Image 1 (spheres, each protein chain N blue to C red):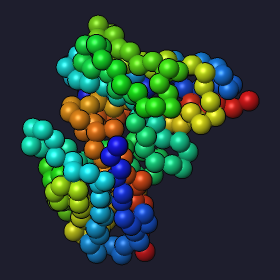
Image 2: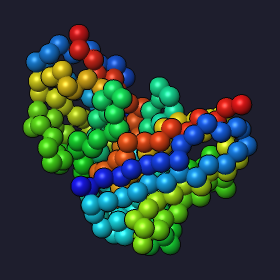
Image 3: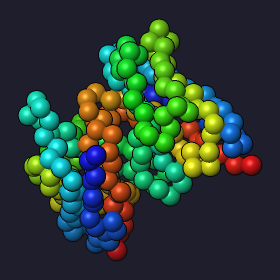
Length: 108
Length: 118
C-alpha cells in the first residue's frame, strides 16, 4: 500500500518569505499510462479542502502562480514563492485514495 | 453553479445507522467517479469510498467495508452513503468529492458532520 510522508508537519513562515513542503511516497507513483497523479490540496481553517496542484505540477484554475509543484517518482515538493496571510492552513499531498498527514502552515 | 451539497449528518448512538446524501449540480454528474472522504476532528483527510460513473463498481476502505454502502442515482444527480453499525471512530466531517481520475478530487462539498456517541 502507498504511504505518503510529508515534512515538515508544522511550518512557521514569515510573510513574504518562501515555503516548501516535501511529500515522499513509499513507492513510485508513476501509473501505467506514464502519468504521475500526485495532487496537493489546501485546507484553510474552517473550510473544505481545495485542490491546488494535480499531476505533480499542473496548477488549478484560480490558484495563484506563487504556488508550484515539482518532483518525480517518489519525491515531490510544493513551493510557495512568497507566503501571504491567506495561505495559512493545512496542506495535503495525495495520490489515489492515499493522503499525506498534512502540513500546517502558520505565519511567524 | 458547479457545486456539491452534502446533508444527513447527525448525532447517532453506537451501533446506529445514518444515510448521507450529496446533491450535485452544474456538471455532468454521470460522467464522474464520486467519492466520500472524511476528516475526524483535528485530524487529516481519510478516503472512505468511491463509486464508478454508472454505479457498477464500488471501493471501500478496510474499516468500513461491510458496514457502509456507497450508491448513486444519476437521474437525481445524487450520491449517497449508507452507514450501518456506526462506531465512535466513525465520528468525522464527511465530504463528497468529484473524482476526475485516480483520486484527483477537483470539487468538494462543504461537508456534513457525523457524531457517534451515547
